[in-house]
Image 1: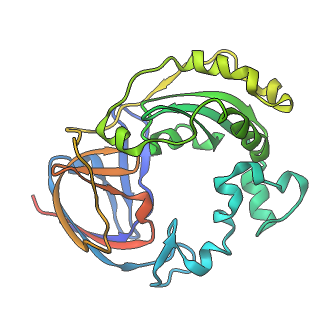
Image 2: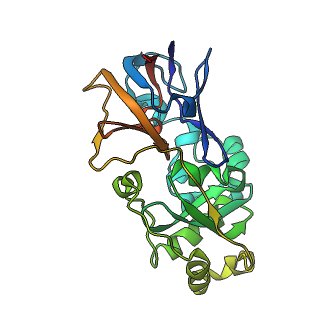
Length: 265
């Protein structure tokens, strides 16, 4: 069986384990059903997620020009504290920025390889945690806009990490932590204008990933250096496909790449 399309991040569905789907223009692939099967991934070309042209992908699925003009990849996306829509100040497209920034946001703790703080729209819970490969997570505050979430994250990352060690996450070198205790300890460092949004009485969300076998060493698949790869799929975690030979493929990092996916058995 063979599929071809432009990669975008895998869609997910909460479950035990998480269910993963690859969505192409003409195909909808339930990736969990490919576990244990031999797959061939072939690099075909590029398709910018904005202009749709066969132009080399620069970052996050966009060609160079679109990366620097599309509103969905403005600086405020990676740095929420730079959000200004609540002030009526435009970055690239004020209407788009209002739509995204002026909605409920969550500041959370997630444990993928270590406990980290992060920000996401409320509508993206628990998707954001799944994408990060977190096996447990908890909300700290729920605020009405992205700016308040951003300044809270900036304050809290002085006291807890804000990055995931993706290698430890994929090797499953993890330890359970008491995130309620972490949440309560961090309350003192929340900015004054956000303190009223603190979530007092919630519990951890636990997540389970479809992995048959975790790798001990990691080799990242780069489609430009290795335009054709064949391996047995052994797991899916975060936005990574994990293969039997310890090769891992980050689907999200390859958004905008056109691939042919062939199931060999």
